[in-house]
Length: 187
Picture 1 (cartoon, rainbow, N blue to C red):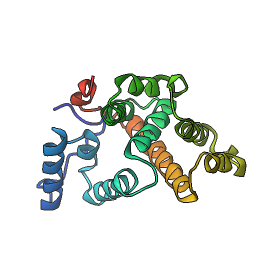
Picture 2 (picture 1 turned 120 degrees about the horizontal axis):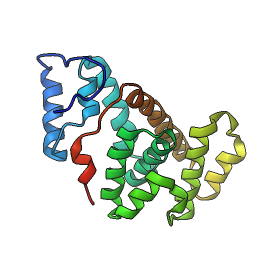
Picture 3 (picture 1 turned 30 degrees about the vertical axis):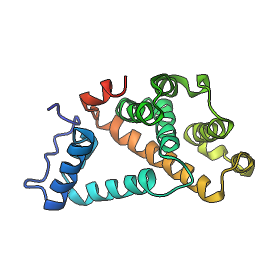
Picture 4 (picture 1 turned 120 degrees about the vertical axis):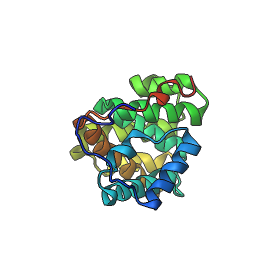
């Protein structure tokens, strides 16, 4: 296995049973343990905080579909040029949408994709929040409401975008390497 980051932070050894179980589930469902999880395994409290927030934002009930949340992750990561997240979440978009072209368009330039008005507005807001969060005003949130997003949905859009802005910086700052398996997924 490639070193998941440029930092030499070895995993806790032995891993707690709950972490071992979580990694086994990842291996069974994904065919791998994502390097981002392995990278966090030097500190189980940080790993648990990361996975808890990720699971809540990306997998819990929401007015946003799993595909829409992955689309947000890719657009944020595209703007931030985060190799790890573009690779991992680009693969998720390809899988969830069944459309490998969409995954590539979102990686390169989401504006080239044929999107529903709701998704286009969501991604325009995501791009603004990522590039110039200090400029977001009420009319930007109202634009989301006008295409059918509730205030709870807007909260979720903002939190998913913010999470990936943070994780992009961690991945880029540590030179995190995506698992090789992501590159060929759903192509």
